[in-house]
Amino acid sequence: MNRVPVPKLLLVVAILLAAVYLFPFYWMYVTSLKGQSEIFANPPTFWPRDPNLSIFQDTWEKRNMSVFLWNSVVIGSGVTALTILLGTGCAYVLARYRSGWIDVALFTILMIQVLPASVMITPLYVGFNQFGLLNFPRTAVILAAAAKAIPFYIVLARATFMNVPRELEEAALVDGNSRWGAFFFIVLPLARNGILVLAILTFMQAFGEYIYSKSIITTKAYQPASVGLSGFLGPNATDWNGIMAYSAIYVTPIVAIFVILQRRIVAGLTSGALK
Amino acid sequence: MRRVLSSLIDGKGFDILLVSLTMIFLAALAGTPLVYNVMMSFQEVDMFNLGTFSRPVVGLDNYAAVVAQPEFGLIIRNTAIFVFGSIAGQFSIGFALAIFFMAKFPFASTIRGLFLVSWVMPGLVVGALWGFILAGDFGVLNAILQGIGLTDGTMFWKSDPNLSIWAVTIANIWLGLAFNMMLLSVGLAGIPNDLYEAAELDGANGLQRFATITLPMMRSTIGAVLALGLIYTLQQFDLFPAITEGGPANSSNVAQYWAWQWSFLLFDFAKGATVSVMMLIFVLVASIVYVWSTRHEVRG
Image (cartoon, rainbow over all chains, first blue to last red):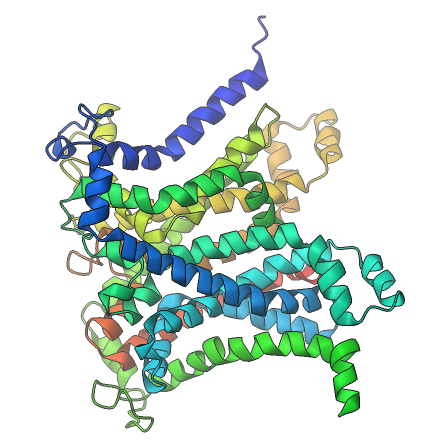
């Protein structure tokens, strides 16, 4: 019997599977390059007849994307900063000790993590309205989205801190460091890579945040790119190459960062979620 | 005072400070709203008393009114289809892929990692992509299905009331598939190889090895993945405004989108709170299963 080179065959199958799975991305880029009539062709063309690159600049200007994307960056950075500030120390302490109180704190955090945003938005909106926070809509969204991001961040960052050997910290304490010194100069530098990956993940999630922004931010000048996209989306959408060009501009940076940092992101994600 | 200060710098106070800052923030922005939500579901909240703190208490009226809505039954049915359809699809395809990628071949982990790019996408963009793929006359899914001979006619995924909930479910299966696969891969990697070798020596075939080794060893992972699937499916919101907006005629509306519509389209915040409290009960059950099945791992 002829021996088939099994690993090579499996590699071909794997590439085919990935191609099928990632087809929607290909379709996004291809559609954005098609002309207005080619989009509605039946059967569809799998390669644009007359690729038109000017669509990206047109969409950027017509849809005012610079404002939307800037707001997404502001919201993403705000959420990430707040999450790192509040989550890192907490994750460290939760990784260091084991007691009934720590279990209660962990349980609380896991329970907060599962609350759907669609459940939280009604009371948050009414509460923000009563405290006048709706006058600072982007801040309100950052606060709300950070409360959603922090529990997730803590669970994953805690797994990172678990991998920092305790002996190093104890040695630093014996050498006369305070707890603060040992935390900032010994533990944090050792956990730096893990925290960086988690920060990028937090940013990506907040960069695409939709429900809080849609409900809280009514002024167009403060809306992020997700709300901008929803403006011409929906069951009756027709401007499909515009939508795809907008989507492509919106997600290409995320896709690029993901592909570059793929190995680390996947490792960071899986380490804490389920070990 | 000195003792408190030195404890903050060098003792237990340091730990308590770090944890309590975060806990206060989470209590203010997650705990309080949760309680407030339950309170509002027993009150009458409209545009006039939205800014005040004293509102008329109406008891269970909101619950009675929500249940009496003609679309109530339909929305329960749709939510069940969406949740169970998504979980079944994500889990079975994700498990199959996870097992496939356990095989040894070049670039296996790199290619597997590429799948996870769907997980970092903005939900609204995923909705936009699938909204176009699932379009009736010019959608590429119909063209492919007809091309391989699975269907003859055109499937109006988004506008046919019998199909619209499935349109969103298909998009959600695609979105959650990669995360399921990744978590199951981690679980599979934790099973010692000698078990399989011993079973192979004893003459067990592939199916027997799967049933007697893989499944029992993966029990806690599977429990956690299914519970997380339920939690994430009930969290999924962005696909609905992007693909069908719950339509046509609520045929693809689900609890989480309905709750939002009550509050932010009809401005009846009490009803929105009521629907979300009902939904919350399911989420809490799922999260107890999740916490229970990960209790060993989380305690570390």
